[in-house]
Length: 527
Ligand SMILES: [Zn+2]
Image (cartoon, rainbow, N blue to C red):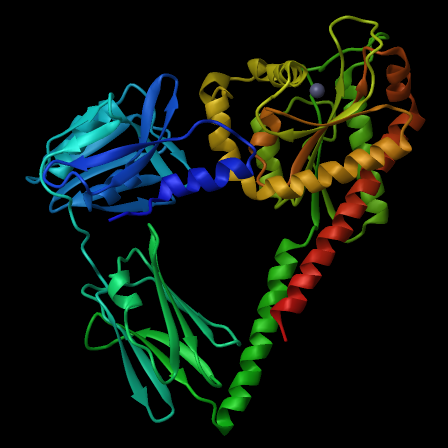
């Protein structure tokens, strides 16, 4: 039997999307009594340690795990025994079958990424034995965990589905062997009915083999690590569907009604509700808050130019000019500044400000400089958040990140941005990467077309200031303070105005494209 595993799938899907090529591993689980059965768990190497996905391990051992997404904890249960880990935390809490509780400290933190908890494999095996109740050992030579006994089977909550025809429709009975509380269904107008049942496991093979006739044309059951997805293709016109728990058992019932006269009114009401819902959703996605982040400030001057020009002063002036343009010419947009005056703002605080204000686009404004002054190197660069690829990009990121050493308790607040950490950060943010790329591209053209500054292109580097903001975001190094011409341009009111105008134009074009897409989404959504 081949089992699809969450972390592994997530890593393979997300890493290429984020443009990263970090080598990914899996560790096989081999059960001594039936060695041909293949199970495996997602793994990767970090700081010389092999980390394994605890979620996958549970799957492989047929154990149930429960995640508390609020407190970012994962709990594994077997009988009375429980094992609990927390994200970015080294402590493991183990409660044995006699309810005795002990706390263990790993020498490293548990890593939480892509919805999965990763633990250091070799250190964790003895702890995991306590919860799995099976003696296990990791064998580096074959990269496998050897486990005593036979391959465990999964407990199934949903063994099958029954169909109960009614005069005006059909009831789909999802048989359940324990109470399942979190479920929902969605009926599409083209006759597809989608049902999601969270924290459940179904015998998908049995369900996919069920014979269909009458109102049901097709059934597809899919097991994901966190839920069961049931998809039904219904035939003929459907007025409404409803999902509800059965009063007399743990079963879940989905009633499907054919349209009658009174249903036409209901149907129209439903349509209006959907339309309203989509409009609300569209409003939520609207590009209505733009966050301007003038780099540096206060006791952090940033780089300095040939004529003692301070980066923090230039970035603030450009930021304020851009904000004024937006406030004047883009009335439906709220402008949020991470700073409006010459004051110090921590790098992680800047992302927080953006998130607290529901920002939809984050622009961090900076000026570049080389250590050697004067220099002939000049031009602007647009940066996306990714691990630094070129030495130049790494140098710039190091310089822009250096400010954290002025911040209190920075060692606790910032994890080192190693390549591995980056994979985790960018995995969580890959949703914004595409939009960030689109904006960076528009911005590069606007700046290139309207400024007397050479275009040094779109680059990628690891800027802390971009890590925390959960929205499309770029950092722009407007020009070089270490170059005479660039510095003159940056110091001048016209220069600052031109840069602000180019930034404004880019936002305007991005907003148009973005809202056109939203509009098209609405057209598709409602008929
Ligand atoms: Zn800077």
